[in-house]
Length: 344
Image 1: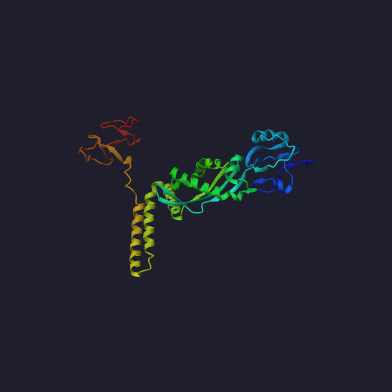
Image 2 (image 1 turned 90 degrees about the vertical axis):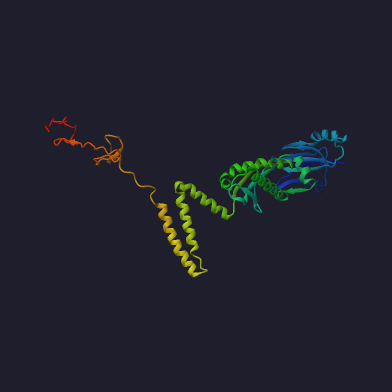
């Protein structure tokens, strides 16, 4: 029987196929000593004989008589050297990266915040993966299926990702206030946590992006108020008083009882006036100008510059005299000005 030359190859025209089984039955041919194998970049070929993996071929062109015969001989003591065709299953596995796979939390994740207690958190982003160990991937996931696509596994990978995200949130004990501002660091924590799960099924998580982590609107409002307090710094007390005034103002809008509403309105108005008066009242009286002070000639206490007697010890203060010509201060009993020589 004449043997036909057969080149086993896969030209991938899709962007979502992970595994392609070469259709020997469709071509009506089997592997023989004239067969060759072409494996392109970002591919590998798995040869399976009687349900057992015979060999895995990376990118390249192979003469199967030379390449596969030693493996089959060792595997099943096959000794006919392709003189008669042999039936094999050949699977091509796509090893390129599959990127921009969107993920999101279908239900909110419950986390315990040290300041706000138990809150609900939602997140979304994207990730990328690739086949890292083809034989492990075959045994764990696609088995003997004739084809395997990304949509056959993406939902499972998303479940794994959200599970790792939940565990990381619990273990990190990060607060809601720090969560939104540290998505990059948290992203690395989740990536390390889930990588081993991907490895168990022959895959590798090449990239993970957490685009946003959101909390309920009431928590966001509380975080906004906390940010205002941090910006105001020393004016925190003023803000709290203004907030109290606004609360009283809102209470005054009660339409259930007109008289009660009017009473609350009056109280709110008085309360607001008092709040603002207290908020902006000077903290203390300005101290007297030190230039208007002098020391007592007897006890040394600080007294008014114009005082003739010390209010502390009662000592009479020496009155100073000045030269009428140049204005220089004179010492007691001087008959001539030591500055200009004017006779006094």
